[in-house]
Amino acid sequence: MRKLTKKGNMDSRMSVVLNKFKTRITSYPPGMCPLVLYRSLLQLSMNQSCGKCVPCRDGLVEVERLLHLILKGEASPDTLSRMKDLCKMIAQTADCAVGVVSANMILDSMEEFADEYNSHISSQRCAENKVQTVPCITLCPAHVNVPGYIALINEGRYADVINLIRDRNPFPTACAMVCEHPCENKCRRQIIDEPINIRGLKKFAVDQVNAREVQPPKANVKTGKKIAIVGGGPSGLTCAYYLALMGHKAVVFEEHEKLGGMLRYGIPEYRLPKAKLDDDIEILIKAGDIEVKYGTKVGRDIQFADLKKDYDAVYLGIGAQIGNRMPVENADCPNVIPAADFLQRIAKGEKIDLTGKKVALIGGGNVAMDAARTAARLNAATIHVFTRKRDDMTALASEVQCAMQEGVRFRTLLSFLNIEANEETGLVQALWLQPEIVGPYDKDGMMTTEHSSAYPYRFKCDLLILGVGQRSDVSPFESAGVPVERGRILADETCQVQNMEGVFSGGDCVTGPSTAINAIAAGQVAAYNIDEYLGYHHKVECTVKIPSAIPKSYAPTGRAEIEERDPFERVCDFKHVEIPMTEEEGKREAGRCLRCDHFGCGSMVGGRGE
Image (cartoon, rainbow, N blue to C red; front, top):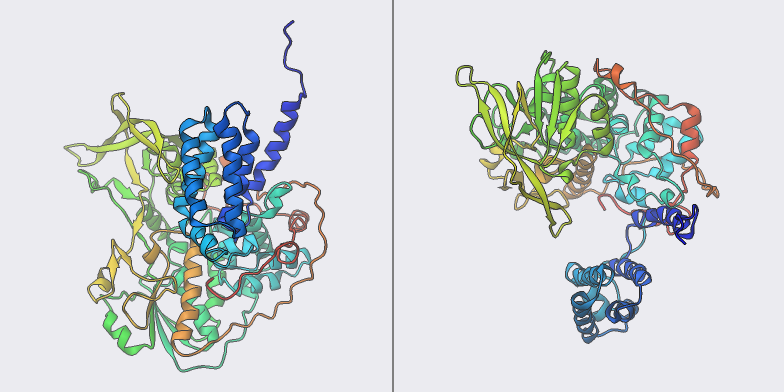
């Protein structure tokens, strides 16, 4: 007798459990030994074995036993060799993916973490002194005390929230609106339900109290030292802020008429109102002895050699504001523009009317999404975003979703071929795209593609925006002897420029285009290391008292999201799109925090720049 699958059977009930368990992998704590992670994954694989084939059924058990010996410090080099041979055998002879993939996973770990295996065998310990740390603090590049300011929000102490954030990040308002919130990625709350909306809570706090009204800590006594800061973006201003609080004089050389860098000229008004950015900058400049020289470009108005001679140290935080073009014919047509350049023109007040225009955009990053959403607000008839691979969409999922809501259309698996220009007008009239098919994943887990047998695709357009990255203007520094490689200044993790005493650099000009919080972190690290270089060991005072931790409820609770204005309304203007949380929402969301800085492993991140 045949029967339909019974509703609510064991498998469906187990699926609910497994769906909840997925977050345990996502929230795997930072600071853990990688071999412990591989052992736990191997144990999961062992439990998936059907038991029919010996290599999988018995072989994985033996691999797990050998790995356990290594972790206990009871292994020898021969143990490692036996485990490697056993994994190779399982990968070659197991009947199904459970055994094959599990064995290859351990083989990959032996290559990727060879130093860890060798250290456990030779020294009976991890290669690094690994200890679990508070996930949100560790994953914030600036190491802001996230549990601390969430606890302050819960008590309604919003001015203290702003000053606790400023202890590590002088842009509480700007980051509340545009930070990519990596701090949420391993939030332990998702073991229960969903990660805390950390960026949302930060925005809730700055919505309650204007940062302009909250005074920063008092600056230290003047040291008489003078540091040149090249670039008034988030990295340079952060460096200037902390140096000024330490008692040094910071002189900022800014090429533009206003400060802010890509926060001002790269992020659209609808995401970051510039009046709100000015709230942060005004207080930052008044924090200590900071002088700003506007309209001053190194190499044009002043020479790098003069900075080295006249100042006790130099920090290069020039960012990456020049949009890349493709090295193809017709890429310099008037209606082809890099996304970064397009956004800067709008930010500087240029009136661009795209009414009735068909816009094509190559690229899938956050800058590309900003450009696409900006084009929609300029009344473009259509906006099509093209990417070669699905994982080329590196923009935040929320940004992609918002763009879709505002009418932006997306096409993947189309690689760029060439640009077709009209011979008479010299303007681009179409671009040619090659359909792709997916291929194997590479060693980094990224999907590869190859050309499909389908014919190339011709897409008519009136404007082509290239969201293919940005670069820094390093030529004045390279000609002055600053070491540069592939358009990036060579500096180490302390922000010290290679082979140049007293010269520091950080942010996008070192790492390539990145996020505002990464640039801020670089400026913070540089400031403390410049202070050490000058012979001091200052600490910036933070007198905010963090509330005591109390036991939390572990009942699953929904996450409060930041709502946005209706897409059909917001796409018609450049007004800020986000709707403030209510006090009830903010307090309830803050109450979800588990205070990992106190309960559980909770090891706080130590010194600056860790």
